Length: 109
Image (cartoon, rainbow, N blue to C red; front, side, top):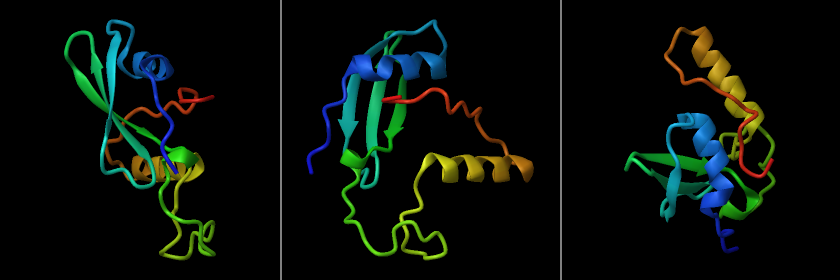
């Protein structure tokens, strides 16, 4: 399945929310290497670059298997916002430095 074409306009709101209102998203470049997510380099108007990950069915190149959804199975894909938030909360509870998580900012919501 070919990935969807992600545009600057689609990621501009998320980039502004993550980086603040002082920058404007100039370009979006899809990078190779993401097999269960899309990986994009976002270049801002001040030349700052950041990496954005997009978890989307069209970006997942792994075939669906019987293990999907079985989190006890080591071959389960183990992806999704709920798992991400749980891992974030666990690391924070252990006193590890974690970034601020705002699940209200997202792509395609």
